[in-house]
Each structure stands twice: as structure tokens, then as C-alpha cells.
Image: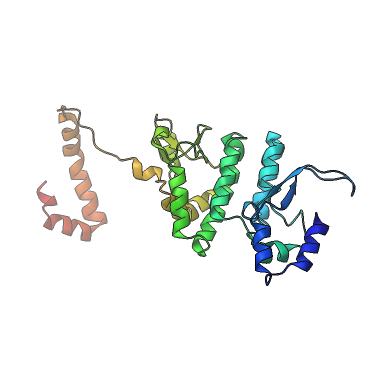
Length: 288
């Protein structure tokens, strides 16, 4: 196929718009499902549209995807996600695919979430949690540099509210979406709160795998922007503290203790912090 695409590259340029339009309107980019051992070998594969592939992706994401494949044994996942990057299949044809055929240089914002949707049907959340984390970090960088528009985030946010769009891994090893049927979905910004309340029913906390200290720091530094854009609240914002009134109680023992210790506290402040004592005296502390 490389020879065919090279021939097309030489014969077709952007000035021949009608030919190019006819070419890219149909699936014409061949994606092999396996590597050929010889030139004459017959290779199975599929033809895809330019919008269904990209030229390359982050090496870090591809490495993470390969690790998932090796753990899960999901060849189909590798074919769906990794093989759609053309740089390794057709090296040297970047100008033809990107500049003439309109193939994306890197995956679009929606493509990343489509990849996650495919993953959610093939592997467990615990196996893909780290990949989700890497994707989120990449999307944050794209948001900051303006590669992702507000329309993109609104569209994906709308997808996430559908019950079938389960692309978010949780600590319970479940794939969930932001649909109300999954309960309250949050991302954890306070590990103490998570340990205390994370097991409550109808609360799903996002899980990003086993992270290093540097990666944990990235959660608090980078993720808030993306999470806010997608409508995913922090756990600390949905957990509120309130005093619980249990009725009247006998506090005479506590009052007796305060009356006993207060003179000693006054003398200590008087000798060690005279300025503070003077201010407290003016405020009525001396008359207690």
C-alpha cells in the first residue's frame, strides 16, 4: 500500500481539489491488522476514513497502551488504538496524509474519549486507570494552549452524561459516566476524606492507578481545569461538615476543669506574653 500512496502523492496535489475530495470521501487508508513477514504476503486489515486515524500520538500514551495490551492480552484493543497512528505504518508519507488528505496530526479531543470508550469495553478499569490519567494530563495541556475549544469540552461533557458513555475508572474498579444512575462521581483531592467517606454508597471516586508522588502532585496542579470543564466536582466540595446536636448534657465537670486551669493560664500569659495579656485584659479576659 505504501507504493500506491506514494504514487497518489506524486500524481495528486492540493490543486486537484475534486480528485482529493473524491479520494477522502471514502475509506481509503489501509490499516493492517498484523505485520507481514514478506512482501508477497497477504495481510488482513481494514480501510478507514482520514478522520478515523491520526499521524502520531504521544509516545508516553502509546507506551502506556502497549502495557495495557501486554497485561490484558487484548489484541483487538491494540489494533483499535495503536494501529491508527500512521507514522509507524507509512513513514515518510506525512505530507501526503496530513497536508493533502487532511489526517489529524494528533488525535482530536473527541478521539481521546472515543479511545477510552473502546478501552472500557475491553479491559478492567484498574488496567486502564493509568492510561486515563495520562490522557487527562495531555488534554489539560491542549486546553491550556488553546488546541481544545469550549465547543469540544461541551460536546464531551454532554457525552459523559449518557449512561452508555462509561469512560471513567473508579476506586471500586467500575467504569462509570456522569449519568445520575451511577450516583455522585467525583475526583479525589483529599486522601483523608477518601479513606473516611470513600466507601459510602452512591459515591464514585475516580481512580488513576498507582501514582508516584510527582504524579499525585499533578492531580492537584493540572487536573482541576479539565475536571471543571467536564463538570466533575472535587470530593472536598461535595463533603460538608456540620455540628450534630445530641441534646442537653451535664457539663459541670468540664466547667470545673476550666475554672481550675484558668488562673494558671492567666499567670503564664502575664509573665510570658505581657503584650498579649494587656490586650486580653482590655477585652474583658481579666474578669473571667
